[in-house]
Amino acid sequence: MFQDENYAAVENENTEYVDETLVCKDCGNEFVFTAGEQRFYAEKGFLNKPKACKACRDAKKNAGKAPREYFTAVCADCGGEAKITFQPSNDRPVYCSACFENRKKAQG
Ligand SMILES: [Zn+2]
Ligand SMILES: [Zn+2]
Image (tube, rainbow, N blue to C red; front, side):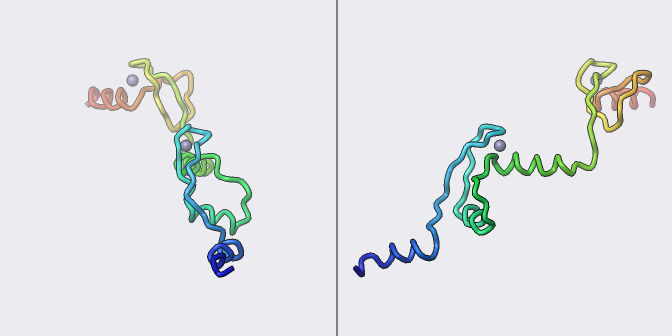
């Protein structure tokens, strides 16, 4: 029965956590659900394993409290995608950052 000592300790005190490789549902990349994270989840009473990798979870977190909102418009100059921080209005042309810089330079 002494042979079972270790086994009993594992059973009663700490579950032995082992790093686990999961696949992110968002980006499809594999990520490691570490032993430490598993313990943290267990302590918090979370029953579900994380579905997304840390990068995707962080991205979501940041998206929720994003300080600025970006609008996507078509650059009036090159026709490329222009990311702007203001709501595009139809009466004013919108330029991508590259074209915007060029125009500023051109105007002196
Ligand atoms: Zn991901
Ligand atoms: Zn452009």
